[in-house]
Amino acid sequence: MEQIRLDPAEQRSRLTIPATEAAPWLLGAVLRRESEEGDVAVRITEVEAYLGAADPGSHAFRGKSARNSTMFGPAGHLYVYFTYGMHYCANVVCGEPGQATGLLLRAGEIVEGHAVAGVRRKQPKSPLDLARGPARLTQALGIDRSLDGADVFTSPLRLELPPEPAAAEAISCGPRVGVSGEGGGEAYPWRFWLTGEPSVSKYRPAVQRARVRASGATAKRA
DNA sequence: GCTTCGATCTTCT
DNA sequence: GAAGATCGAAGCG
Image (cartoon, rainbow, N blue to C red; front, side, top):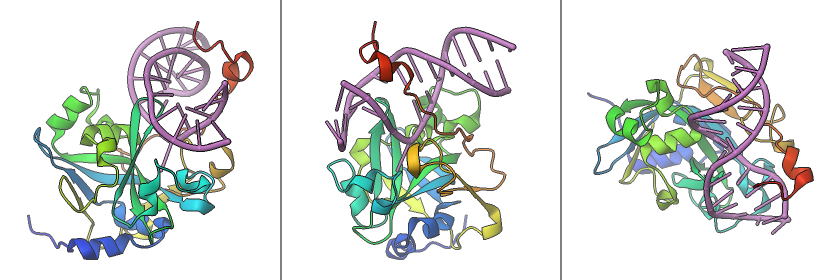
């Protein structure tokens, strides 16, 4: 299969721009994870932009910390964080070092390694569910904190950007998912996806879950 | 179908 | 001590 490939340095330069502008490059790009179990490759169909210190929804909003330090580094590295006690999510760092902008990988379509991804994901009902959702995508690729800071253009990761960014008419945008408070919802339509892709995650508005916890305090565990 | 809720633990206040 | 860039199962209509 013949295709034009940009060298890593050139690909990295494509990402050294604000995340919202880098999004068309990442949509349709293929991220490959090499491992002994077998390679898994995902065609990215949905991303979300996080714009660093100026973005209330970003982990970088409150400044640099041990967790998010990768975000403050150069473009083309993977920022992996652990959340909700059981899930990993991955961002591709964009922009200049120190800006802490990045693109959260929200969903993709498995293009290679369905079997390996299926085992990691415990055989979901539909193949579309293999990488639909940020935590599912990282699970299908076998990404965890050990890959935080990894260069996406160097083994065991191989990111292949398309020769051209996705056309504007092929991209839809909307409010970010799961981000509550002033940084979420309609104020920041920084979620981008390829129009009509079935692998795009379903939109669920950010929900406030203060309920019992707020009043009961210690009623958490019976 | 759609909505609600529990699981589980790191990170930050 | 509380919240969180989530997921999947259970409950309900």
